[in-house]
Image 1 (cartoon, rainbow, N blue to C red):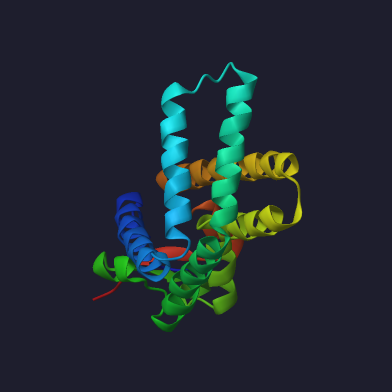
Image 2: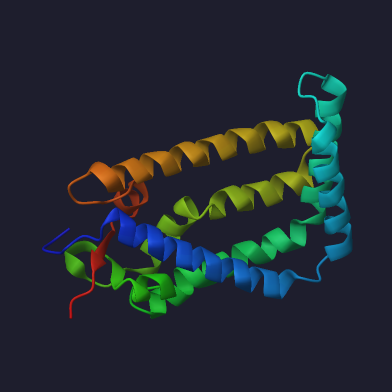
Length: 197
């Protein structure tokens, strides 16, 4: 990727934590009143149910799936706003700030394209839909509105497991590869570098 000093795992990790906190705060500010009472009631019911939950009991498992499915249905608008905010922050904001989010700016790192050139919007879209669960969330939104409950849970479980495996592999790549590039960096042709000066 050219002559650049690649950011360490810890620099990237702390920048990520800062950025996720910012996104969560924005999301909560924007979506606070969207179906709040209904979602809060369902979450309370789920939490209460979990105290008596017996995973070996099929009836208990089905009841828990029903409650979680209802909660996910009530969260469609919140999840849609979440996708929009995530794209806005990690793609658009980052593009216009030369590969930096607020977290990356504070840690003095940035995303770079080939030969240390500014990262392109297409590269940011690709790496963001992969690493920030945007693709999984979009598929989840489509599934929750179009298919029955059991099909939804089967596909959602597979997608969530695949996303988790992807993240673990990405973390291992960043930790152990000489160039410190994660799987999403390799797929999008980017690297995260230390800012000069």
